[in-house]
Amino acid sequence: IVLTGAGDKAFVSGADISQFEGQRSSAQGVRYYEEISEGAQLHIQNSDKPVIAMIRGYCLGGGVNIALASDLRLVADDARFGIPAAKMGLGYRVSSTKNLVDTVGAANAREILLTARQFTATEALGMGLAHHVVPAAQLEALVMDTCAAIAANAPLTLRTAKRIIRELLKSPAEFDAPGCAALVKQCFESQDYTEGRRAFMEKRKPVFQGR
Image (cartoon, one colour):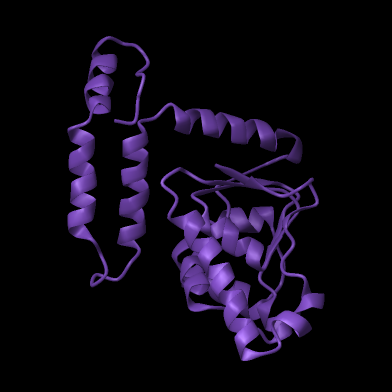
């Protein structure tokens, strides 16, 4: 799955501030908005399929949340990142802050949230907010090559890797060790594992079926 903006000016330029007075000026409105935003973020994070954020131009506010919920962030060199919550007095929700800290570390998260400034693609790369940065003209080719590389791999292994990484980022009390072990076992018992071994011995590319 590839997520990108319409055109090359922005991945997501953030919420429409002009609508805040009507949609986020009451406790009920804030709660409803947060539930919608949280739901979207969780759907991306919990997708069984790998999700790539293809980022050009501005990636601000909620756009950073979407990018952080994705598995890979492939970025054009003209991209700009920022979370301007502090400029508007917004409270940045816990789950989004955790995703930020898990990705860029506490020190960088502090700078991003406390300064509320915009960061270049190069700065984002140094923080771990971007996986790769290329000239804008090369971004689509990088995304297509990455998709092809992922698609050539065993689907059950990809799903298992995603799930285990998600679980490892949880607290020890929440970690689902039996669920992770069951997914690993399913991989070893799959037809794809047999196909992968045979393809390696026969020096050919494997043909995986996801079972």
